[in-house]
Image 1 (spheres, rainbow, N blue to C red):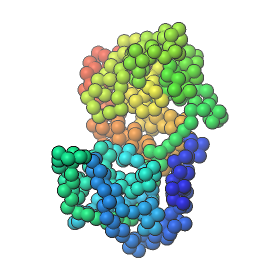
Image 2: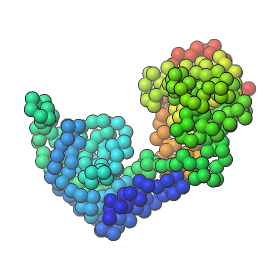
Image 3: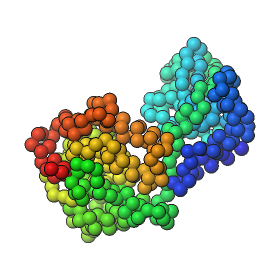
Image 4: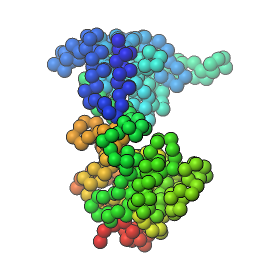
Length: 397
């Protein structure tokens, strides 16, 4: 029964995103998890599962001797926060289905729906080592390693019902690439193509989009038509190398191919020095070419979203405008609407935290974002003269 409910959750499309997550809760309620969860919320001590460690794999993930149903019966379901006790130590873990439900280096209790096992793991790390359960040593015999085990069992109990659900839902948004599934959107919205219209940015000078050349998303023809209509003259392609871009059948002889193009090949590691170099390359290209400009990656969502946000801040856009523009993409792709927990979670985790990290600030509100963005662009290698030229190209007044 529980495996079936997981399938329902993971099959949600953009047209049916549900914050209630009734699939997980429903299954748990039928198997007794509902009453256990309610008891925990009411102040009663939730039941504790003391479980043997069935296996520690080569990466340090610990497979527990339990089932989804047993976890449910003790009140622990996907989207909950649980406490894991190992000897005298305790750890707070979210319950998810993938390693990537948490950031690199973070712990997760993973309901592995493919292999039907429950594991304690770290995304890009060893849970067994970090929790002090076992130490790995190299041996000559197969498989080449052995675990010196200090603890053979762990204890799990519910800490907070649905305490991870908003973040889990935000990380599991799904969509289709079929135009007919998005009847409420215009062709430009389907392509995630739009003018950056935040206060401080010149009107119809800076545009953003999904890729107009790579056909994999089924949106490129709409993006290509939209960029031609907008009269785009210069393109920042954050996704493709020059060779890859020119290899698409859609490139030769296209409107796109007649534009000035730069290919920074930006990564997703927004905290890296390389990312700062790509920001510099992109901003310098805009300062040295003529608009209207189009910025795109593959989806026009992550890399495009952060670069546009930096430029918007530099042009003097207030935080509310920058946030609104960033989140339009999530409405276009996933139907995420303002005022929902998922909207707030995505905004905070994806945009606010990233900009605060780049700018070295604690909060977007109450910060002079124009000054902060200018200081950041100077730090990645742009000169005052180049900043003045960039401001002349994209900023009002």
